[in-house]
Length: 195
Picture 1 (cartoon, rainbow, N blue to C red):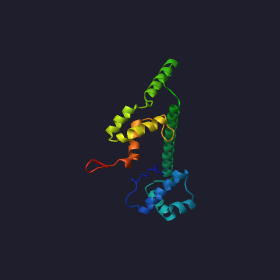
Picture 2 (cartoon, rainbow, N blue to C red):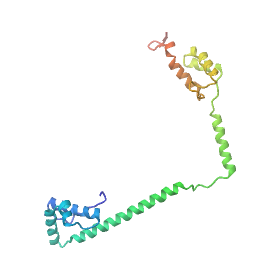
Picture 3 (tube, rainbow, N blue to C red):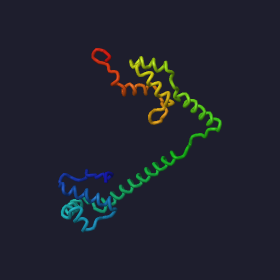
């Protein structure tokens, strides 16, 4: 019932909180069920005593409960129409996204795009390093002792890892090897002395 706006400006300070609560519960009942409550429902949901006191005070102001009911029902219908419009708009928007409204490409243009993508993919393809490249990189990382072992291992495996997947970046794999083989060559970090 978050959409229900209770307008209480017309209620003077002489109304008790119980009477204002009864008015609000009355409006909520009408908004929820779309009809005037029965005596039993008034007793159960609104509170008979508070409701009767509210009704008496409203009649002194010449405000009829049926008038309040009509106003709440009008508000309810307006909100329902807004909700339907919003749902229809959302549905149309969703449906328009499903349709491809972009201009279609000619077969030649599509083939050209595919060709360009395949060239890009080939340029990203793995290129096996030469032993000299591995040795130079190992020197940069201060692990030249692993260069030959690393190169021989992956060359024999046709540059596939232990899981059978083709390597994408041999330098990254070399770093992993360095970390795995850290116990074979340790550096005393405090003084730069290799043990």
